[in-house]
Image (cartoon, rainbow, N blue to C red; front, side):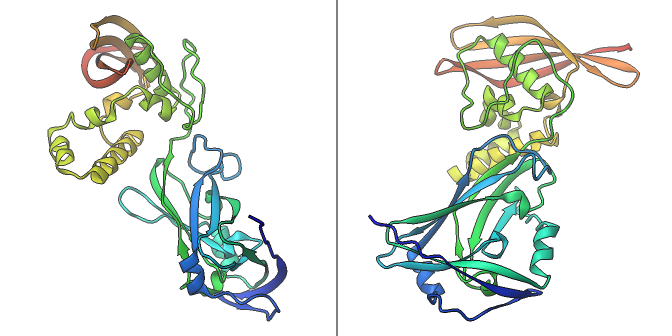
Length: 332
């Protein structure tokens, strides 16, 4: 199908949050018709590991697509600076909304000339662009966030008329710590390509501990049955069993976010300075791995015996439970 793309450059001036477009001979956009005949979707572009802050060095690139789902030509305005065409909304697991960046607020509350194009796309065609979520939203803490977008076909001057997008789940990990181990190479693979391997139970535990030492959360959860770990607590288990499928998914995401911030199950996310695998026993489906782990404090070192319980599923060993025994302390 032949694409028709009409781009006419014009401008308008911003005064505080009141916007007035200069008169042009451009095509008039019917916001209601646009909302009826357009679909706005978002997805991660070149997904990788995301950390708080670091807007330039660790961006959260979002691929935005506007699709003409109607039978007529779809027309809309698109600002060169997309802060005047879109809004990102981000919520944490407690449904608290994250704040906009200072640069976004400053741009929208300062008198300036904003340039935009008037775009026309044919039925079945789409127009896409990529924006850094961190340019719009302050992401200062590790957690699970839910992100959606609002697209304004008449620019930010008409905030009442917008088309919402789908929602994304964004996992932001704590910034990498200096603690690490060199015994096993653990690559910083992206979430999109990281896959568990059919390795032995002791290697599963070693890689999980090293992933925690390096704050590589994707790899930390890679061999963990998060659902079973969540259900270790009887009250959580009862609530989980009574939830719908969506409710269970939300509980799992919230559980992972709490683990990442060391709010619960602090033993499993504690970072050892060193560790030694003592014994490994397993049958075809069940196994246990005992590990002595050392935790350095300012004047002494704690020694603990971790017993990890693993279960095989589709050829992959997964951690589903653990216990911890204190073995005492020693002076550094």
